[in-house]
Length: 261
Image: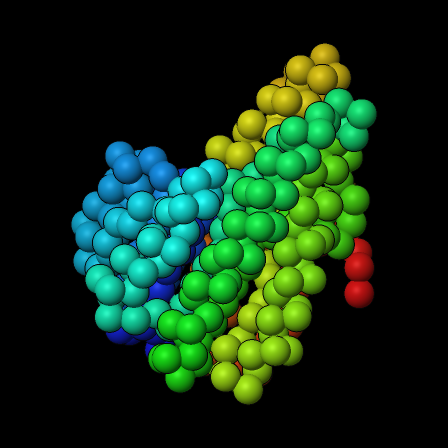
């Protein structure tokens, strides 16, 4: 199926690894020209090289959510290099895991800065570019935790709920601009972040690796983690005309973990 993304101009943030990397690779494979944004230059450049080796087009952009001053500059650099923006995948690094009483006030502030404030700042800068293009797609990457509580994930659950509210508000405010705004809510996906969470569960609960992973998969009917490629392919579909009547949605990508309607 041709998704009609050839020549579309896409910016993917936190694209050096994990879900962001998967989204960038899938969009490029469908013919989009992708600005790969992140803070780790060597890893970021490796994504660009991977895309180029597969016959796609990509450029690297310095955009570090831990340094808010780079957000506007990174977006403007991406728009300049690509000649505008049609698609933005708003992804952030995951906040620290742990139970509420083990999370410091400083960690709460950092999580809100790196997730809620950063994505609000990003949206403020990218929306004019999408308006100038006559419309486009703004896709937020959140978590299945916005649909069901995940133990020891209070920072992720709380901050990404705020991002869900932001996305839904933007979908209403900018529908007249033909800007479709949606969220993808991933459950267990086999990324470096997933392995880090399993490792943290092992240490907190004194389990072996299989026991720790079983906790993360216990509520997943498919009994397995998804692949980054599967997530990336859904990003590409949501960015395409095949999803041109979908906005304001928070779509679970979780192997059935979320039972919410």
